[in-house]
Amino acid sequence: MSDYTLTVGLGDRSYPIFIEDGIMENIGTDLAKRKIASRYVVLSDDYVAKLYGTTLMATLQAAGINAELLTFPRGEASKNLQVFTDLSSKLARMGIDRSSGIIALGGGVTGDLAGFIAATYMRGIPFVQVPTTLLSQVDSSVGGKTGVDIPEGKNLVGAFYQPKAVYIDTAVLTTLPVEELLGGVAEVIKYGVIYDYDFYCFLEKNLDAVLELNPAVIQEMIHTCCKIKAEVVAEDEREAGLRRILNFGHTIGHAVEGASDYSLIHGNAVAIGMVAALRLAVSSGLCKRREAGRVATLIHAFGLPTEIPEGMDIDRIKAYIKTDKKSIAGSVFYVLPTTIGKVIITNELTADQIDAVLQR
Image (cartoon, rainbow, N blue to C red; front, side, top):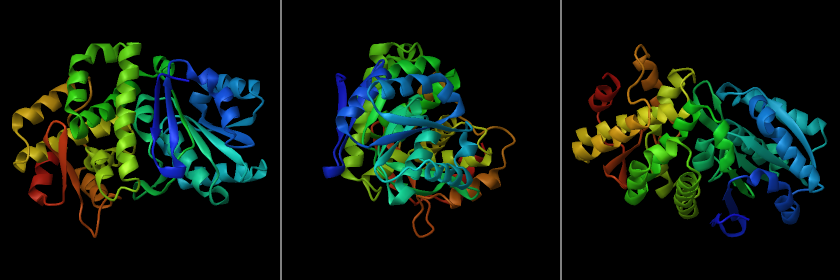
C-alpha cells in the first residue's frame, strides 16, 4: 500500500504499520484481504466520529465489511472504568462475539480504551488502530499498551495487547487543533532525545516544515518515530528493560497531567516533564547544561510549555509521582539523558532534587 510500511516484529503477533496520505479511504479494501474479523465495531469519540466516521464506514461497507459505529464523549475524562463497562455492555447487546473485531478511530484516549476493551471482551478479540492525532500516530497506537485511568493515577488499569494492523493517514492532521498537533510534537522530540541524535537534528532543521505540515517532512517524521518504537517494542514488549526509555518525561509529566485534573493535554504535560527530567539530569551530573539547554530550547521553539503551571498543587504532583505505574518496590524511576540520543534509567535521585525541579 504505502511506501512507508513497517512491521512490529513479535513473531506470530507481528503486525504492519501503514503510513500514507489518504490511506483512510483504502482501509476497507486492505481489511477485507486480511480477514481479521467477520464484522467490526468502530469505536470513536463523538468529535472524531463526525470528522471521519462517515469516511471510514463508507470504505468498510464498499469492501463488503459488516461494520457499526459506536461513540463515546470526547476527552481523557472518558478513559475510565465506567465508560469501559458501558461500551463493553453495548458490544454484548449488539451480539459481538469472538469472531468480531474492533477498530479504534481516534487519538490516544480512543486507542487506549478500545484496545483495553478488545483485550478483555470475551478474553480478547482482534482490534485495529486508525490513529487521528499526531501523538497517537507516533506513539500510543504502536506497541500494545492499552488501559484506563482511575482516580489514583493515569493508566493504572490496563493490559499489553497488540493490534493486528495500524493505519496512519497523515492527511487527517490538517484538521487537528494546533494545541493537539504541538502535543504530538512533544512525543516526537522524545524519540530524538532518547534514541536518535540524527533524528533530533532533523527536527531542529525542519521545525518550520513540521509546523506547516509539509507532507514529505511529516511522513518522514512519523515513519522514523514508528520505526524507533517498533524496534524498541520488538526487543522489549512488556517494558522489562529497553522499553522503559520511552517514559522520558512521563514520570513527572503524568503527575502534572493528573494534578491538573487532565485539563492539561498529555503532550503538554510530557513537554513539562521532559524539561524537568533534563534539569534532574544536569543536577545529577549526568548531562551537560548546554546539551540540556539545547533540548529545552527546541521544546520552547515548538511552542510547548516548559514550566509547571503557576498555582498547581506541588504536593498533589508528588502524590501522583509516588503512584506512578512504572515504580518498582516503592522506588520511582526516572529516564534521564546523558547526551542527546542516549539516556539512563535511575531511581537514585534525592527528594531535594525532585523538590528543586517542582518548586521552580
